[in-house]
Image (cartoon, rainbow, N blue to C red):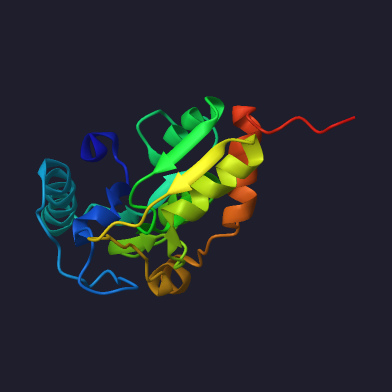
Length: 200
């Protein structure tokens, strides 16, 4: 479709999961070996390879964005933060594996990365994260505190960790995240309307 429409470039949405969960080392750069761990990561890696093949055979430019844990208002159920919001609305959050870590990047920052990638001539993969490793229990506790929900968490014995190396994004795209986790979570919580009422 890109070739037929005369597009000059493709920006492909990939995932940090291509490095494995957990990756071999943190923070994780784009040069980290890729891991075919399941159908999802397999299809993402195949998509990246198709981009490279079309570049080599047809000269169609591309940039792959390997996105970390994107979040924001009105995210669909089945993701961690919406699921914690759902639990909070019922008054209780219990969390096994609270010491698991992710690299949370706000959706507006992700959208800006796509716009910057469209204007960039770089061919290859770029991490889109924050470079900050955050435990799940920190996220869940903030949601519980904002909503007045009861909160308990336990650590897992076999914990997974994620944290992006975003040096290439800064250097190649001129991109870096501008929304802090505190600001992003506040926007998410306000949109979900679960915050405790302020006494008169």
